[in-house]
Amino acid sequence: GQQVMQIPQYQHVQEGEDFTTYCNSSTTLSNIQWYKQRPGGHPVFLIQLVKSGEVKKQKRLTFQFGEAKKNSSLHITATQTTDVGTYFCAGPTGGGNKLTFGTGTQLKVEL
Amino acid sequence: GAVVSQHPSRVICKSGTSVKIECRSLDFQATTMFWYRQFPKKSLMLMATSNEGSKATYEQGVEKDKFLINHASLTLSTLTVTSAHPEDSSFYICSARDFSGIRGTGELFFGEGSRLTVL
Image 1 (cartoon, each protein chain N blue to C red):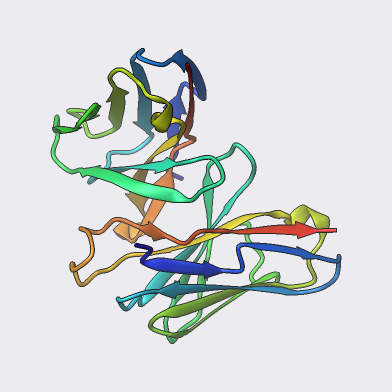
Image 2: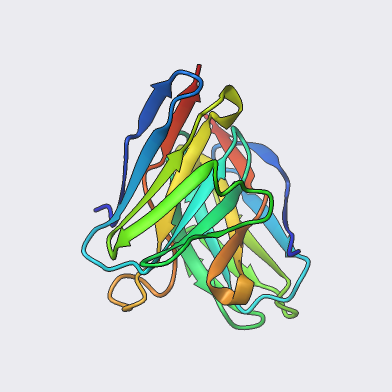
Protein backbone atom coordinates (compact mmCIF):
# COMPACT_ATOMS: atom_id res chain seq x y z
CA GLY A 1 0.00 0.00 0.00
CA GLN A 2 0.89 3.64 -0.06
CA GLN A 3 3.70 4.71 2.23
CA VAL A 4 4.57 8.24 3.24
CA MET A 5 7.91 8.74 4.91
CA GLN A 6 9.32 11.83 6.54
CA ILE A 7 12.82 12.77 7.50
CA PRO A 8 14.21 13.57 9.90
CA GLN A 9 12.28 11.81 12.63
CA TYR A 10 13.47 14.30 15.25
CA GLN A 11 15.11 17.70 15.07
CA HIS A 12 16.44 19.84 17.89
CA VAL A 13 17.30 23.42 16.97
CA GLN A 14 18.25 26.59 18.78
CA GLU A 15 15.70 29.34 18.59
CA GLY A 16 16.38 31.40 15.49
CA GLU A 17 17.76 28.52 13.44
CA ASP A 18 15.97 27.22 10.37
CA PHE A 19 14.22 23.86 10.14
CA THR A 20 13.18 21.65 7.24
CA THR A 21 11.22 18.43 7.10
CA TYR A 22 10.97 16.31 3.97
CA CYS A 23 8.08 14.13 2.94
CA ASN A 24 8.27 11.32 0.38
CA SER A 25 5.41 9.25 -0.95
CA SER A 26 5.70 5.86 -2.61
CA THR A 27 2.99 6.91 -5.07
CA THR A 28 2.09 10.06 -6.96
CA LEU A 29 -0.27 12.27 -5.00
CA SER A 30 -3.12 14.39 -6.28
CA ASN A 31 -2.46 16.77 -3.42
CA ILE A 32 -0.58 16.92 -0.16
CA GLN A 33 -1.60 18.38 3.16
CA TRP A 34 0.46 19.41 6.16
CA TYR A 35 -0.61 19.25 9.78
CA LYS A 36 0.95 20.33 13.05
CA GLN A 37 0.41 18.53 16.33
CA ARG A 38 1.48 20.28 19.51
CA PRO A 39 2.61 18.10 22.42
CA GLY A 40 -0.48 16.61 24.03
CA GLY A 41 -2.70 18.06 21.34
CA HIS A 42 -4.42 17.00 18.17
CA PRO A 43 -3.35 17.59 14.56
CA VAL A 44 -4.25 20.95 13.10
CA PHE A 45 -4.35 21.62 9.38
CA LEU A 46 -1.71 23.97 8.03
CA ILE A 47 -1.97 23.94 4.26
CA GLN A 48 -2.80 21.98 1.12
CA LEU A 49 -0.71 21.89 -2.06
CA VAL A 50 -2.21 20.71 -5.31
CA LYS A 51 -0.10 21.75 -8.28
CA SER A 52 3.18 20.25 -9.38
CA GLY A 53 6.04 22.44 -8.17
CA GLU A 54 3.71 24.60 -6.10
CA VAL A 55 5.20 26.77 -3.38
CA LYS A 56 3.14 28.41 -0.67
CA LYS A 57 4.18 30.59 2.21
CA GLN A 58 2.62 31.27 5.58
CA LYS A 59 4.71 33.87 7.38
CA ARG A 60 7.90 31.98 8.34
CA LEU A 61 6.68 28.67 6.88
CA THR A 62 7.36 27.70 3.27
CA PHE A 63 5.73 24.65 1.75
CA GLN A 64 6.76 23.04 -1.51
CA PHE A 65 5.25 20.28 -3.63
CA GLY A 66 7.65 18.40 -5.88
CA GLU A 67 7.46 18.42 -9.64
CA ALA A 68 6.65 14.72 -9.72
CA LYS A 69 4.05 15.18 -6.96
CA LYS A 70 5.67 12.48 -4.87
CA ASN A 71 7.51 14.64 -2.40
CA SER A 72 7.06 17.79 -0.40
CA SER A 73 8.90 19.88 2.12
CA LEU A 74 8.17 22.30 4.92
CA HIS A 75 10.77 24.90 5.80
CA ILE A 76 10.56 27.13 8.85
CA THR A 77 12.75 30.20 8.93
CA ALA A 78 14.07 31.48 12.25
CA THR A 79 12.28 29.01 14.48
CA GLN A 80 10.52 30.12 17.62
CA THR A 81 9.50 28.16 20.69
CA THR A 82 5.92 28.29 19.44
CA ASP A 83 6.98 26.12 16.50
CA VAL A 84 7.49 23.14 18.81
CA GLY A 85 5.46 20.12 17.80
CA THR A 86 5.27 17.29 15.33
CA TYR A 87 4.72 18.09 11.68
CA PHE A 88 2.93 15.58 9.50
CA CYS A 89 2.41 15.49 5.79
CA ALA A 90 -0.57 13.54 4.51
CA GLY A 91 -1.67 12.33 1.12
CA PRO A 92 -5.00 11.03 -0.16
CA THR A 93 -5.50 7.32 -0.57
CA GLY A 94 -8.33 4.88 -1.08
CA GLY A 95 -9.88 6.84 -3.91
CA GLY A 96 -9.09 10.14 -2.31
CA ASN A 97 -11.48 10.02 0.61
CA LYS A 98 -8.92 8.85 3.16
CA LEU A 99 -5.63 10.40 4.19
CA THR A 100 -2.41 8.53 4.83
CA PHE A 101 -0.19 10.38 7.23
CA GLY A 102 3.54 10.55 7.04
CA THR A 103 5.76 9.30 9.81
CA GLY A 104 6.11 12.83 11.18
CA THR A 105 8.98 15.04 12.25
CA GLN A 106 9.16 16.13 15.85
CA LEU A 107 10.64 19.58 16.28
CA LYS A 108 12.09 20.85 19.54
CA VAL A 109 13.25 24.42 19.85
CA GLU A 110 15.61 25.42 22.62
CA LEU A 111 16.26 28.94 23.86
CA GLY B 1 -13.18 27.39 17.67
CA ALA B 2 -13.39 23.63 17.55
CA VAL B 3 -15.34 22.15 14.68
CA VAL B 4 -15.04 18.53 15.84
CA SER B 5 -15.57 17.65 19.47
CA GLN B 6 -14.49 14.39 21.08
CA HIS B 7 -15.41 13.01 24.48
CA PRO B 8 -14.06 11.85 26.87
CA SER B 9 -10.58 13.30 26.66
CA ARG B 10 -9.19 10.80 29.12
CA VAL B 11 -10.48 7.49 30.36
CA ILE B 12 -9.02 4.87 32.62
CA CYS B 13 -10.70 1.51 32.78
CA LYS B 14 -10.14 -1.98 34.04
CA SER B 15 -9.19 -4.78 31.72
CA GLY B 16 -12.24 -6.49 30.27
CA THR B 17 -14.54 -3.49 30.32
CA SER B 18 -15.83 -1.59 27.28
CA VAL B 19 -15.25 2.08 26.62
CA LYS B 20 -17.25 4.34 24.32
CA ILE B 21 -15.77 7.44 22.71
CA GLU B 22 -17.97 10.03 21.03
CA CYS B 23 -17.07 12.27 18.13
CA ARG B 24 -19.31 15.13 17.09
CA SER B 25 -19.09 17.51 14.18
CA LEU B 26 -20.14 21.00 15.20
CA ASP B 27 -21.91 23.29 12.75
CA PHE B 28 -21.60 20.92 9.83
CA GLN B 29 -22.85 17.55 8.77
CA ALA B 30 -20.33 14.76 8.40
CA THR B 31 -21.51 11.77 6.41
CA THR B 32 -18.05 10.34 6.86
CA MET B 33 -15.78 10.42 9.87
CA PHE B 34 -12.40 8.85 10.37
CA TRP B 35 -10.98 7.16 13.44
CA TYR B 36 -7.26 7.19 14.01
CA ARG B 37 -5.05 5.64 16.62
CA GLN B 38 -1.75 7.11 17.71
CA PHE B 39 0.95 5.52 19.82
CA PRO B 40 3.41 7.74 21.73
CA LYS B 41 5.75 9.60 19.40
CA LYS B 42 4.27 7.80 16.40
CA SER B 43 2.18 8.74 13.43
CA LEU B 44 -1.58 8.55 13.06
CA MET B 45 -2.82 5.17 11.93
CA LEU B 46 -6.21 5.09 10.25
CA MET B 47 -8.39 2.48 11.91
CA ALA B 48 -11.66 2.86 10.11
CA THR B 49 -13.96 5.08 8.12
CA SER B 50 -17.29 5.70 9.76
CA ASN B 51 -20.19 6.04 7.33
CA GLU B 52 -23.49 7.56 8.36
CA GLY B 53 -26.30 5.07 8.05
CA SER B 54 -24.13 2.16 6.99
CA LYS B 55 -21.36 -0.09 8.21
CA ALA B 56 -17.94 1.27 8.92
CA THR B 57 -15.05 0.38 6.66
CA TYR B 58 -12.12 -1.00 8.59
CA GLU B 59 -8.47 -0.87 7.60
CA GLN B 60 -6.54 -4.06 7.21
CA GLY B 61 -5.54 -5.55 10.54
CA VAL B 62 -8.14 -3.70 12.59
CA GLU B 63 -10.60 -5.98 14.37
CA LYS B 64 -14.14 -4.79 13.70
CA ASP B 65 -15.53 -6.77 16.63
CA LYS B 66 -12.99 -5.17 18.91
CA PHE B 67 -13.52 -1.61 17.74
CA LEU B 68 -17.23 -1.09 17.18
CA ILE B 69 -18.13 2.01 15.21
CA ASN B 70 -21.59 3.49 14.98
CA HIS B 71 -22.49 6.55 12.91
CA ALA B 72 -26.15 7.00 13.73
CA SER B 73 -26.51 10.63 12.76
CA LEU B 74 -24.90 13.19 10.49
CA THR B 75 -23.06 14.75 13.41
CA LEU B 76 -22.16 11.84 15.67
CA SER B 77 -19.91 8.83 15.40
CA THR B 78 -18.97 6.58 18.29
CA LEU B 79 -16.09 4.19 18.77
CA THR B 80 -16.50 1.46 21.37
CA VAL B 81 -13.44 -0.46 22.46
CA THR B 82 -14.88 -3.76 23.61
CA SER B 83 -13.33 -5.94 26.30
CA ALA B 84 -10.40 -3.58 26.54
CA HIS B 85 -6.95 -4.87 27.40
CA PRO B 86 -3.74 -3.02 28.29
CA GLU B 87 -2.51 -3.28 24.70
CA ASP B 88 -5.52 -1.20 23.65
CA SER B 89 -4.17 1.73 25.62
CA SER B 90 -3.57 4.51 23.14
CA PHE B 91 -4.60 7.93 21.90
CA TYR B 92 -7.71 7.69 19.73
CA ILE B 93 -8.58 10.65 17.50
CA CYS B 94 -11.54 11.19 15.25
CA SER B 95 -11.72 13.52 12.30
CA ALA B 96 -14.15 14.76 9.71
CA ARG B 97 -14.34 16.90 6.62
CA ASP B 98 -16.89 19.55 5.78
CA PHE B 99 -17.71 18.64 2.20
CA SER B 100 -20.07 21.57 1.89
CA GLY B 101 -17.04 23.76 1.50
CA ILE B 102 -18.19 26.20 4.13
CA ARG B 103 -15.45 25.16 6.47
CA GLY B 104 -12.11 24.73 4.80
CA THR B 105 -11.26 23.18 1.45
CA GLY B 106 -11.29 19.48 2.14
CA GLU B 107 -8.90 19.25 5.02
CA LEU B 108 -9.53 17.09 8.04
CA PHE B 109 -10.73 18.65 11.26
CA PHE B 110 -9.65 16.61 14.24
CA GLY B 111 -11.27 16.12 17.59
CA GLU B 112 -9.28 16.73 20.73
CA GLY B 113 -8.50 13.03 21.07
CA SER B 114 -9.21 10.49 23.78
CA ARG B 115 -6.40 8.98 25.79
CA LEU B 116 -7.37 5.49 26.88
CA THR B 117 -5.51 3.71 29.65
CA VAL B 118 -6.46 0.13 30.38
CA LEU B 119 -5.25 -1.22 33.69
